[in-house]
Length: 87
Image (cartoon, rainbow, N blue to C red; front, side):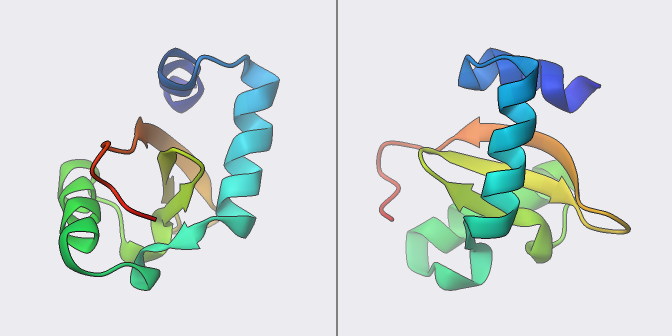
């Protein structure tokens, strides 16, 4: 799966850890609606780049995870948060 490959590269973890982190991020990560200002705008830019709905973004740790929520949540990709991003 493309998402697992990209996440392994970006997060530096193995395949099983990607699945665990994605599950953890989806269920316990902060949703996009809990952010405002510059952080919210940066997350919106990720939506446009990946064609994802607001429900599909979760911030967990130092990463933002993008999920396709059309049917079952399916991990699309993950990005490092920029240094300026304030949680």
